[in-house]
Picture 1 (cartoon, rainbow, N blue to C red):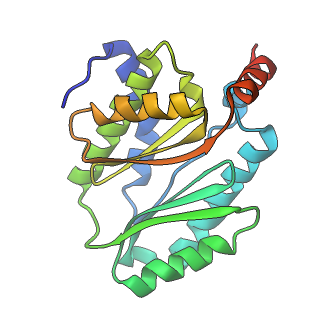
Picture 2 (cartoon, one colour):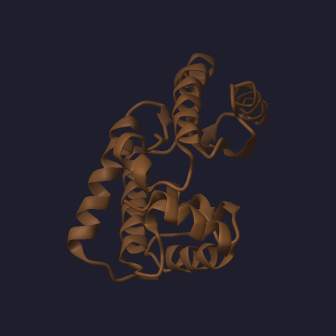
Amino acid sequence: MTSKFSSPLLAIALLASLVTTLSACVPLVVGGAAVGAMMATDRRTSGAQVDDEGIELRGSSRLGEAFGDRAHINITSYNRQVLLSGEVPNEAAKQQAEQIATRLENVRAIVNELVVAPVTSMTQRSNDTLITGKVKASLVDAKDLFSGAFKVVTERGTVFLMGRVTAPEADRATSIARQIDGVQRVVRIFDLISEEEMRRIQTQIKP
């Protein structure tokens, strides 16, 4: 499947994804929450954004201490909901990682998408980063979507979509992601909100 998007937007999205690529050089990768200037265009409250950053930083440290180079674990938090993705050596390690994440302060839910498999190669991770960039660029290109409402994570061709969105927005973003070349599966991890709440949030964050 293929998708059309503008080169400048793709370049911006790929640059934004470069941080994840560099972090992927070590077994444990932090998803990274957008803070600072992004707070003005994020549907999360500023408190939730700060909490998400703290969850990812503390989670990265504790998972790193627990597993070292035996596993490749991404921890991504959006609105205090945590996604665990990557590879672990066995089912016990998968459950241990979830227990560690559960004990992190401010976490309200865990989505454990870790798989028991060998750690992915740098080639695979680079390909995942490229897919993430393409999805982000396509969301920006979609004039009927507010791209700042979404967070995108890719593991082994599986795209995880997170965000505070309406049901139509969730369906639209899912459709866009499925059309990107290299995407094997799309997993939705959304906080669904009403159209009325979406309009209220948009009014509050409008510059």
